[in-house]
Image 1: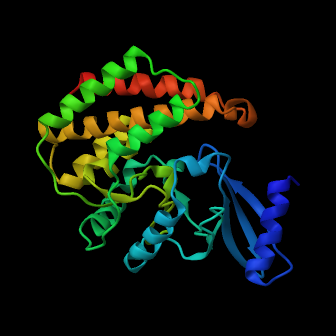
Image 2: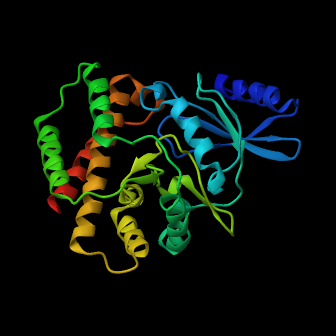
Length: 287
């Protein structure tokens, strides 16, 4: 048992006032967090311990505020414990099918229902502030002596040009990481998990997040969401948001590589960054 696993067992017993906590399995999906299913007294929970340097990208006070704000919507699983200092979080485990383990498009209807429940709600969250966030991520990379290549600078310039040409859209409460790995269907309802990045944003941003499973999945969800074959303008808006996400995650991957997480986690984050750069280039060519 690793030190992290021992820590999770000990903290679970303390939080639950129990002495029988045991680890059932580790949940994969994030790039560096440690999230395990914990069993105690016949109940199952998830326990998240943020990975190294996670605090660079997530404000835990904002995350907790968001969890409290969206609680009345019934979209998330119940939070049992949350520490804003460490980022540790315990929640009730949801038994069900993770959408990334399916063909995904068969679940478009339940995905759209969950999205519209969120987007059409009166919940108020902090502004996601995409380009402010991107600037922060760029600064983190520069602090690691990384110089953004000319290709990145050109792509960002093109992204800004597209932004200026798009019509203004009302921002609504968004999950902002609405990818299939964060969606669990229990047979009756869809649970939307991991609200670390939630904020007020263009609703198409959430649809674009489906692009993590393939752009075709995002396009299929878009058609289900708008209820008709997407117009050229709607497609362009989707491509724009997905391109932004690619540049955003490019910076995250670069940072993780520069601080040594490629070697530590046995994941080539430099290769991941290259993949996202290519994705942004392809998407912006469609705009």
